[in-house]
Image 1 (cartoon, rainbow, N blue to C red):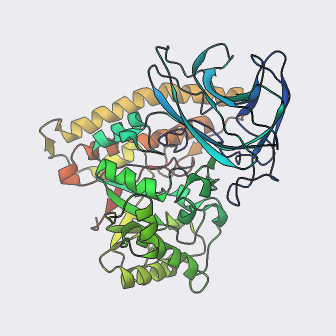
Image 2 (cartoon, helix red, strand yellow; image 1 turned 90 degrees about the vertical axis):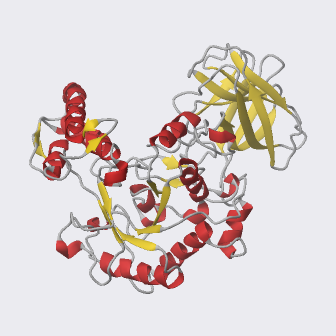
Image 3 (cartoon, one colour; image 1 turned 90 degrees about the horizontal axis):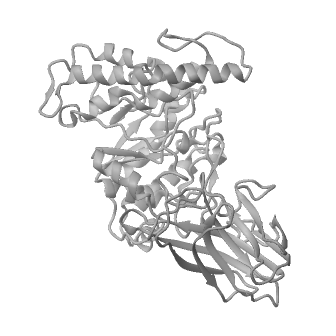
Length: 498
């Protein structure tokens, strides 16, 4: 699941103008007949040391009825709903002597239809945040809209952290999309591992999920590059992940960065790793420490004085990919420090019995193993033979038959999609080739392989396991989409050895 543009309800894409250092990506100029303007990134006028640039709008010609300004396209458009209230905000400052009002609106892509609008005054030469609400009337729902800020006279204005929120789940500020969130609440998941796997590690160490940069006011959150080619705002930070668990009544599984990143960089155990171990201890204190503690006080300041529930801490993510062989010692260093301060916590190793013996942790005994299986549907079914055939559910009946129906449904969807993906890839000039997955299943060519990697994220086996939560005690709830070579669905996280 994508966070920005997905679960996180923010509608403005590239709200802090940090997505591209060379150009204001996803922003465009608004110029009516009779108005002219230019826009550019301006690192010389940053909002603060965290948000290190701004967008400068220089209007050379404008008048009443002929405004000029900037527009944001959102994530595949700004969704407009009738009789809906939107929360808008932005930071702005102007060149000395310019005090014109700023018109804030949601309008159609061509600018001919105004769905909601309001005017903001009080612009000065110092940065100031402006907050307002935009209310739509009896309009036709559409996603072909944009978010627009304009002025009607010549002058220079700088903008930063331009935001627009629709109604959110439980009306929480900086919150979640209610439709997606309610769907997950209705699933009644047993646990949520956060902030994710690849998302935790980052491509490089500098791109990891640095939780201390994801808490506090949005103006103090610089964001970071996600491993899938786009920048994360970190508006959904550590505190919001914890609220997500509370809203779903799910067990939080806190994953802490353990000194390994996706492109292979790692931190050596010992003194080099110690700052990362301390960072994890600070993170745990934020989650469950008293409101009088250093990091617990920041949690209380964010509106949650009571400690969050926490039982499980996972050290790293899929560390069998680390070719240095350092995970055993890195895990032991984290485990020792965590147990010394929080002996009640259960510490999870990311290398389980699905991996070769030499990759597993031996120096200490992990409390829990997080086993990640990358297999096809058929292999999962073969692995399960003899284990679940006799299980029955009052609602769904024979579990084995239910799994079979789910498998057939996936195949019915997968095959035509695979053909279309293959044809599209061939049309782009890719040479035809044959590939094999780890289980020996042969695919037609690269197009089919990519599709199957994506389909694996929705394995019917996971759904089948969810059908018997009391007996199987497993759920599969993911927090971020993985790269093509690594599936997003852990089929089994167990406290016992199978």
